[in-house]
Image (tube, rainbow, N blue to C red; front, side, top):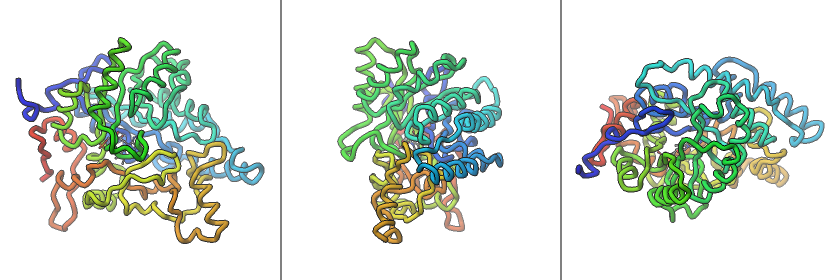
Length: 420
Ligand SMILES: Cc1cc2nc3c(=O)[nH]c(=O)nc-3n(C[C@H](O)[C@H](O)[C@H](O)COP(=O)(O)O)c2cc1C
């Protein structure tokens, strides 16, 4: 038997949708950091790529020149003037249409090659657009309409999401998975979703070292990904369930992935941070350079996201302690019956006349993510510089998505192969 260090992820296969896949999922990164080009490049190599459905009406406007944002801003302003923001409802047919248009445009670019992997979409429950369940339903149905291979449900318990999709003709043929950070969250999800007589096809266990929002409190450092994977596997066994468990958060080398498979029983890994600096990533070039420059001391977990979840980011993110006027009309996607923690913080600062000093407690997440001013990254973001070299002009050379994917796939001995 080979030692773990000598094995590569390529020696394993993930079985999904009756297909043998390279056991590497590139995780969803909103807003459009995980672009169509990134997800398609991952699928081309035989893995699972994710696009994200975060703020799709705005993204579709930027990609295809539609007018969803303008319409949303107009309707929201009118509602606000008449009855306050709580009266605003994004027209649900339009939310569904934007999701369908985007996903269709991505899926049409798949090659159809027999060895090609899958393209999934990441759907965060927290993006409610005022009317949580019905807007979530419109987003999920739009993704299914657009022919997506699968949907990963994240950032919330998603206790109703299966029921919301259950009438759709593709409910039983698309791959559906849930992202959890504990046995407890999985149990709550399964108890509710089992009413649709459909089990998830896969479970992503996201540990405390991930980028983006964390499914933990500020005590995140007390948890370990491999332990949670084992606990979730034990829960599945106790309940007679056999569902592949994908482990994510802090998997930086292929060997990290092999360990989770060989020692904790994972069926594959979900990885994201290493893809943030690829040529296909939707971050602006200057931000990719900032990510590559990052030192360990610059990465923090803070509470500035108005979702209520801790989030990991670079301390130098321009969105931290900014004084941006709330952009709910155009870009607000977490309005919950008119409320948003940033809106409240900004209004309080405005009343006290101290807005200009910056809003330290919260950030205008939708607008700031959309404008690439929240530099979220995984705990090992400071190791990104190991993955490439500087060019003659002193700037980091950006790896391709295929470079990163294949380094995970074939890498052994805890090594990272730097792009030359
Ligand atoms: C820049 C960035 C943006 C992210 N955005 C999302 C998101 O929109 N939805 C989500 O469920 N997870 C998001 N994540 C989490 C990833 O999908 C993934 O599960 C996690 O980051 C894996 O850990 P790693 O980054 O250490 O590889 C994001 C991660 C990063 C780095």
